[in-house]
Image 1 (cartoon, rainbow, N blue to C red):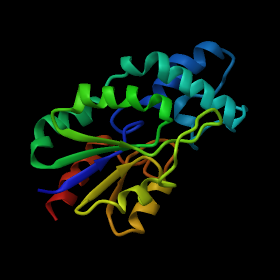
Image 2 (image 1 turned 135 degrees about the horizontal axis):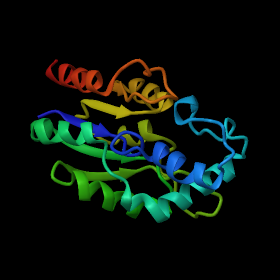
Image 3 (image 1 turned 90 degrees about the vertical axis):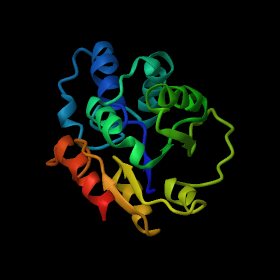
Length: 195
C-alpha cells in the first residue's frame, strides 16, 4: 500500500483564502487586492505590511477560526472514494501554539484515513520550540516508504523532490501550478499512484 504525505494548510483546507476573504478584507476594507492576485505566499509584501504583522494576523485567525474551516470539498470527496487505497500522513508547518488546533481539525475531517499528524514548527519570535528539522524534507528523511508528497509550496516540493520522493504541487495562485484545475490535480494523483 502506497503512502501519501499531505500538507494541511492550503491543501486539505483553504486557510489563506479564508483568512484573506473572511478576516483580512473585513479589517482592511480599503484593500484593492483580490485573492487571485496573491501570487506569493507569504503575501505580506503584496499587502504592504511586515512579515511579523502578516504572521500575527494569520495566527490570530487560526486561533479564533481554524475550527470553523471546512475541508476542500473535492479533496474530501477524493478521500471518500480513494482514501482506503493508501496510507496517509499529514505534515504541516505551523506554529507550535497552533499545532493542537491543526491536529484536531485534521482528525475531525480526515481521521478516517490520516492516522499520523506531524508538524515542523513554523518559527515565531515568541515561541520556545525545539527545532529538530529545518524543513519538511529534513523531517521526511526520518521515514521510509513515502511514495508521494503533496504541498502548495514550491520550496517544499523542490526540497522533498531532492531527497528522492515523488511530489505533486497543489494548485494555488502563488505557485506555478495555476493552470491545473483541482479535478486535473486529483486525476494526476490517481495516475501517479498507479505507477
